[in-house]
Amino acid sequence: MGAFRSMPMSLIAVTADDVRLYGCPNCNVKIHLDDASTNPSIVSTVCGVCDSGINICYNGMVPEKSGMQIGFRNADGTEERHTPKLVEHPRKFMRAWTREHPHPENFSPRGIGRDETPGCFVCGGKKDLYHNIAAFVSNREAGERVVQMFPFGARLDFRPSTPYRVQVKIGACDAHLPVLEQLGKVTYDAGRAISSELIRRAFDAAGMGGDMHDYYRLD
Ligand SMILES: [Zn+2]
Ligand SMILES: [Zn+2]
Image 1 (cartoon, rainbow, N blue to C red):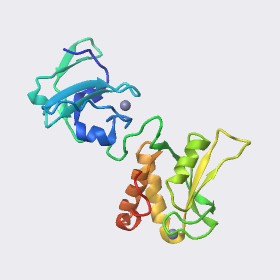
Image 2 (image 1 turned 90 degrees about the vertical axis):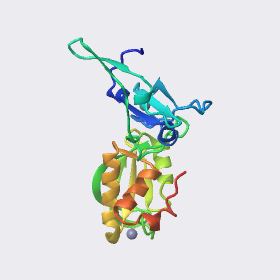
Image 3 (image 1 turned 180 degrees about the vertical axis):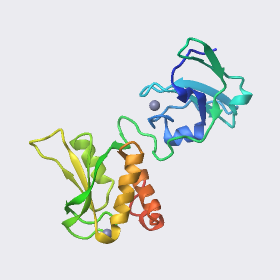
Image 4 (image 1 turned 135 degrees about the horizontal axis):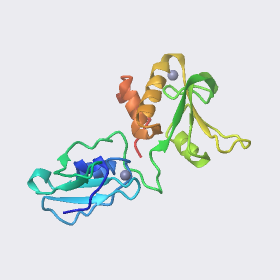
C-alpha cells in the first residue's frame, strides 16, 4: 500500500476544512481539494511545491478507522508502517497562498532601528523619524504588496543602485514600540514571513487585537 516517502509530514493527517483555509501543512500553498464525496474518507497526496506527503481527512474521517498505513524506510534499510495521526493544522498562522497571490511574503527583519517612515503602523501620524523594523523582501513587487498590508506607517525602500536588496520599513512611535517588537517576533517565528494574518497576531500578542482588526483586514 502506497509508495515509500521520506517526509515525516506523511505521519500526520489534517482535516479538509483546515486544508481549505491554511493549505499544505508544511508550506501553506493552496491545495485543490476534491469535494465531490460526502462520505468519510482519507486521501493521500503530495504537495507540488514542497514535496511533503499530505493526508487529508474528509467528512469526519479518523485515520485509525481507515486502515491506512504509510510505509517508511529507515536509514538502516528496515521498514516501518504507520497510520497517520489526525492533528490540528500545524501552520494555522498563515492563510493558504497561491502563485497568483503569494501570501504570505518573505520578510526578513533586521532588528529594530530608527528611520523615517510615513507614520506609526498602529496610530498613523505623519512622516517623521520612528522606531522601525527594516526587513528584506523578495523583490520590488513583493515589497509593494507588503506595504499594501499596512494602512499606515510602512514604506518601500527600493534603491535602483541595489535592486536585489529591497527592504520594507515599518514605523512605530514610542508608545507603540512594544507592538513593533511583537511584529518582529511573530514574523521571525513564522519562518521570516509576513501576512495580514501575522500582523493581526502581533496585535493580539500586544493585547490590541480587537482595536486594530478593523484597520488590518484579511483579504
Ligand atoms: Zn507544501
Ligand atoms: Zn503609535
